[in-house]
Amino acid sequence: MGDLLGVAVLGAGRMGADHIRRLDQVVSGARVAAVADPDTARAKEAAAGIDGVSVHAEAEAALDAPGVAAVLIASPDPAHEEALLAAYARGLPVLCEKPLVPDSAGALRVLEAEARLGRRLAQTGFMRRYDAEYRQLKSLLDSGRLGRPLMLHCTHRNVSSPPVFTSAMLVSSSVSHEIDAARWLLGQEVTAVTVLRPRSSAHAPAGLLDPQFVLFETSAGALVDVEVFVNCGFGYQVRCEAVCEAGSARIGDGHTMVVTAEGGAREEVPQDYLVRFADAYDREVQAWVDATRQGRVTGPGAWDGYVASAVAEAGVRALESGHRTTVELAPRPELYAGVDR
Image (cartoon, rainbow, N blue to C red; front, side, top):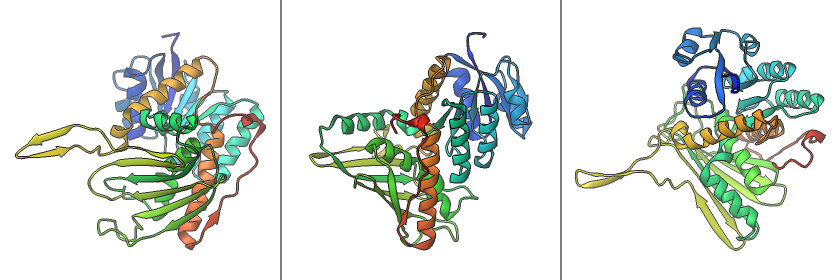
């Protein structure tokens, strides 16, 4: 066990419990050293059967637990900033589930704290960068075979939204993945956001503006549109089509199992992100563990987390005002000079 990377997992909810399972059963080179959750019974249940793990109610107690050399943050969004700064104070590398910090001011504080350290410690959990289809599309666009990308058409649908979901969260929570994916695929920054609101679905909870149509403008003149529909009722669907000067490419059509029975055929549709992106999460955490053991940080960093929060805030303002809203970003730290998006 001494050669394994000891990881403290903060948060034992659905996402945290899945990462605990992943670190224990799927990923090589790491072990779960500590788990923290205010609901210690839930934390104990998530860590059941794992040798050498300690359970804590407080995040900082888990960071200080014996054998902890890295941190995976899967706690509720408002707890991220404090946990990140505590990890920085201890020099611990971090994989933080998105959002890095929900508000751009908090994300900027985290980014500035990392810059003062003079080295990268945080990776933001934008797992689509590790999805096989997204990586294939990225490679194709980077090759230039289809010419310059002109547009991205994106779809983001969920079966249903949680009870606490608000109209703003369609942009700040759901579309945050498209924000990062668009920046990464195109190698461009998002400069402005417009949000259009069709009439709400009859299946949307009262007062929820669902679906929404989000339009991003980029620094090199590409357009990105996102249909976000979080109460579609039938499945979890994520699609992206790149339209370029010399052709187009589409991912996300979902080559899943087709069941033929009772005189008909039915194609199964994933019901949530943990099913659709299971392999991407596995590759993401494995890559983080491998890099951390080598003293490196790869993948989307604190800068990417900050930008996603800033663009999402502009999107929420656009939703509320009904007007095109420009994105204002702080200067990119020298720490990230030369680092690809």
